[in-house]
Length: 393
Ligand SMILES: Cc1cc2nc3c(=O)[nH]c(=O)nc-3n(C[C@H](O)[C@H](O)[C@H](O)COP(=O)(O)OP(=O)(O)OC[C@H]3O[C@@H](n4cnc5c(N)ncnc54)[C@H](O)[C@@H]3O)c2cc1C
Image (cartoon, rainbow, N blue to C red; front, top):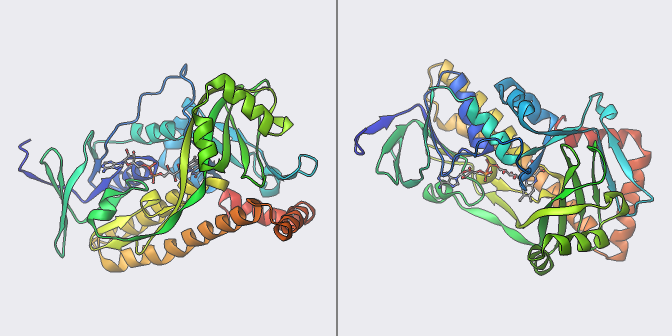
């Protein structure tokens, strides 16, 4: 195709990560013509490969939607790990356990590798999704009834709506002139893939310490993913260690139930909170990390992104079926009105946890002991927290 021909789509999505790919799949299944622009395609799945370091805890609400889209079934054929129990504690002697039985379900959630979930979504695409990959956007212009994207290849795509799902450093957000607020947390987190001495585990746990939480997420077989929050210089230092050295540090710092693990690989991530001033500008609308980044403390980031994606696609599909303009302001305002407060509430709740559990100030130490005791003794409170964690409210 000539690079100066303008190609027409119902919708263009920039970013084909977990959130953008789910949106593309959902809209294409409803008959919309979708353009998906992505910098890098997900790698093919290799069952013999080591699990990726970037994993997410996927809650029941997200699982239900991904099942409806047909991607969950593919993911199950590749690799994922269910967990039945979620534990939180300061001291291993006083563990609070949240159990799948509290929500009358076989599991509370799954740990999945981000790139495997992304691949499962991509594998479901039909001809209704035109992929531009590897590609990125060099310019955006808008009129009152459409938006025009110019790709770095020179190709131009016109559509009634552009969805920016290009992650926390969204370029589209900047091109659309949408401002952000937020901060970089003083802590960072080290993530490590470990081999464990135990058979596949059904529990994910988090220990709160004054220097930050230490978490274990189970993976298929005798493997797990470790998340170690600490101040940024410490985390950066840990990330420079060889696997054998890091193993020694882990065994010193983590509670006993980790077992005699061995580190396979590791990496580190900065932690930032970011919220956008508005969720849309003209015919560009944001979803997932492009709209909000949250402390990963309770593994909610992509679950919030899927909740954005589900609502946004429902509104668009409904407008499309009624032959309305799918980029109309009323639709986009309705999306913002529902998702912005919900996302902010979760971000602030996580910050409350972060403040309450991430320091050694005596009154707060007492308060968190009280919170954990209450959580373990009150059946109703426990049930409420469990419902919140799995995305059923
Ligand atoms: C350490 C850590 C642990 C986490 N754990 C959890 C967890 O347990 N549970 C959970 O729900 N969340 C978790 N999160 C958060 C989760 O990873 C993010 O919320 C999620 O990845 C967001 O998905 P997304 O599709 O919106 O963005 P991304 O995953 O950032 O995807 C963006 C996509 O856009 C593409 N892209 C970027 N720029 C361009 C461009 N200019 N042009 C074209 N394509 C572009 C990228 O290549 C990528 O494919 C964690 C995050 C971290 C850092």
